[in-house]
Image 1 (tube, helix red, strand yellow):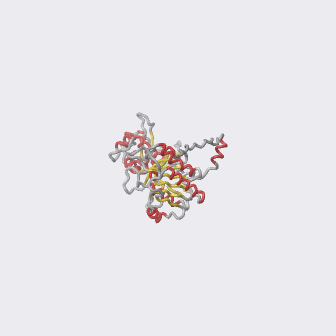
Image 2 (cartoon, helix red, strand yellow):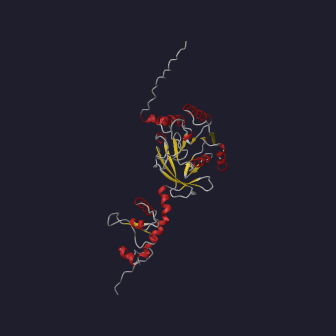
Image 3 (cartoon, rainbow, N blue to C red):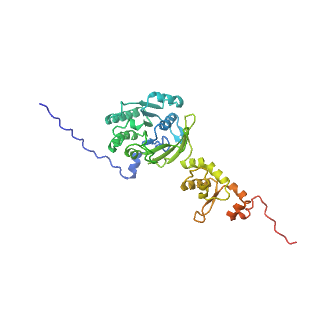
Length: 368
């Protein structure tokens, strides 16, 4: 006679402790912990970096890993020393080749292709538990997953499946580790902030969302990349232009996207205004743009104001109909004072220039 086993009874739910009042929050959080990579990798947080395949995600991560042995700066931002574990779909030979130029030393360990195919949910949970045990024996600072698609169990387009795959990572962040997930984008050209492929649960659950994009209109050998970020932390830069150095061992900060855009276009601005017959408003500058695709009004205004703020251009006007803002190079003023067309358009230049501080004051006329 066979006996049918009774279904297992679910364990009773235990109410978690309630944190009441701000003092309880202070106790739960504890003293502030320094960033691993300022603004982008924080202890106890998950960061998602999305970028097109073969566009530099792993290269950026590799340079950061090589710096962990000493700390320092990366892309102009402080980087603390530490140790990292890399979970990767790549063969060890690729990391050996990177080590030859970057020297990871003894600060990085690898799990190369730890599963045959994608892990099942139970395997993934057990693997994360193994990392927790490793951290207890050998304290770590960072866990890098490259790429997420190779290790995420279940369907990446299913919200419940995605949340279930991300949940075990809380066992790492609860112990103060930073988790960095590298991910592929969706098809076409998604808007900034929505590049991550699959369910929106992935970018919604992480603490810091990074997107790396190629520089617009750049050649194949351009080493610059744009970083866009959305974060729970105010320290995270919203945008940053970085440039991979020629020797492949570092990234340099090139400022915000606006600053880099301005730097790239300033010489064109200067050449346009160097021959301007009088002070020009934005529309006149745009009409005289030397290429067939002049910038839009908003972008042009932003660049012009940046030049004014840096003292490269002068500006007058009220910004109203009949009194638009006008822009000019300071060195053009002396030429315009002797030019009939300029004086016709700018009557203010008909007045004599103010005396130089070095010019002696005229002597008063004394009666003879």
